[in-house]
Image 1 (cartoon, rainbow, N blue to C red):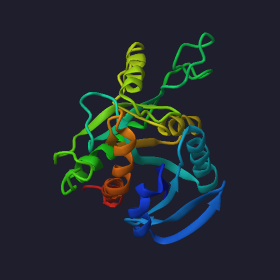
Image 2: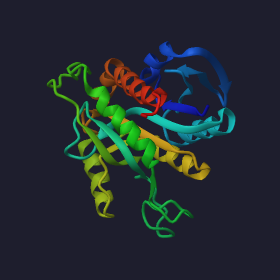
Image 3: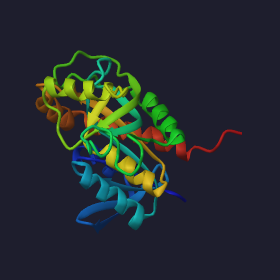
Length: 256
């Protein structure tokens, strides 16, 4: 059976999954811990990408080369960039752009050199499955009240996510990133630090990739506070419920 790799950046995001992993076996590779086992009867390997594009690329490559991952699903948190995206919402990525890529004047800003593209698309089929799992996971989620937000039902968004090796922690920087992307007709919903690299690796290997980011902060002047509180109190719950719903759908027999 095909192996699904479940990838997150931080340990807190996968705490609930490790506790549910059946037949768990730890493998040390490339200075990282990878956990083989099954969830919902599906063969999986759990891994932490660590923070930043280079670390994420190393982890994704190792998953494919050493663990025969046939698809990669990334779950984690991000800063909200689009005005309609609020703390507690989920953003399912349709594409990734690297907002810190600038090889001009040799190449246009944001274009990945020698790829003739600015964006890497997620796998459409896997993305639809992940978006459905997110919508199913909303029922029963606790309100995001741990960081002083008013209780609200999360919204599932789908669209462009921006990646870069910089934690966006001021409103001014957030505006600058968003305006620079919009100047090139790109309207990103969220900003984070790993997905663009994983998308590029999966493109190179022809491996299906999908990603969901729960909004932990608004990428503004309080981002560093909201991010840490969300990671510590909420992130694991979101990840566990989303992955549970996603894998249940994979394990279910096809409709007759």
